[in-house]
Image 1 (cartoon, rainbow, N blue to C red):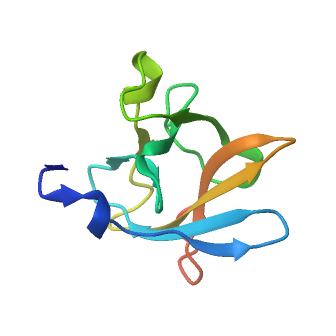
Image 2: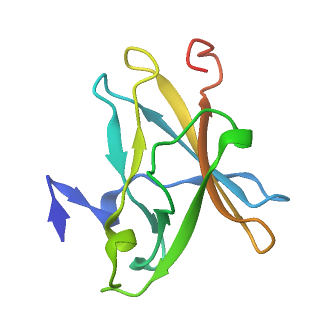
Image 3: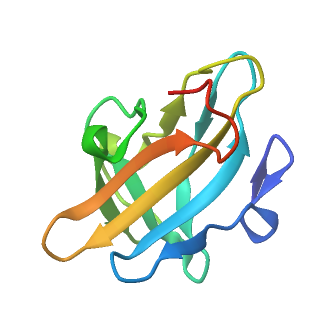
Length: 122
């Protein structure tokens, strides 16, 4: 389905940035009002997604990463399955790298960093 002309099949895709630590990265331009977004599996779409375990507002730096829960299934019950990640605008039209780390030991974690060459963000 689509919402606001958004479609999971045409969505942005993360790329692997650190294979040893299972970190994937997606560069986004954050609009002045900030943005809300979901993280879905590129292969499984809505049947595998990440949901913030707390308020969902991402912070800059891996040491401030937000914990995320893996939600499986198309119609998962509970409030957590509907939560979105949030990015507040760190600067006018700032470019940031959203990072996702998946680990059996540490679980799923999500954070952002300044995009390379844009040092006014963090």
